[in-house]
Length: 291
Image (cartoon, rainbow, N blue to C red; front, side):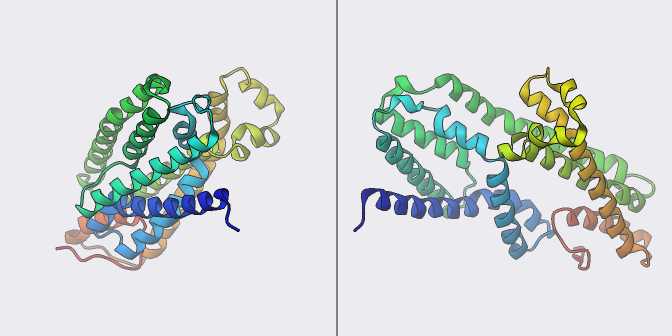
């Protein structure tokens, strides 16, 4: 016999899968649109990589954002019945999923974060009233919606200008690209490692296992720091090591597939562009013909 809990759990799974499908159709398309449009990735590879890394991102570093959605907008104590909170969150998930579906149908790139937070605020206003919403936290969240595009634009500008200045406009762009591509990959691995170890699951936190590797003396030297800063400091050695190994591996791959190839002067910019495209997941064995 079906119980209310079983039905609610089944609905949660169905609506969760529906939301995940819409995230893939909109958010993942936003992220990989440039890679597919530039020819660095095929659509099939983008779908595979999107599924893998969306899962890894949610599993390893999604806990902090989930906590903010779960209790950072409206406190648990505001609800007299936990079932009211569960139904409200389910309604918010369905509402955000429907909006993403409509936006995707019309080809509009929208933010999942905006949709789900707006939906949570909507049901909370109906269920417990606007007075229970943590508007101070909402101000911080809304500020990030303004800061994020600006920071993204600034970083993209800086990275692009550096590539133009030191690679494409250098006297030897192919040689400079051989140095720049491993460096770019190393930076990506460095940032991902810090994200996982600093903001990931508690069992992977640096302050849980790094003291056994570095010794209690090193751990004691950073114990006086704030917890998040101490975790960041303890994570740096691992991030540096993994980034260095990535750079060495990328340099070896580039050397292996280019050591017996003579690059014509007229093709050097095409080759450089192709190498940077391979950072996004393309194959070193294939190339895209210039148009």
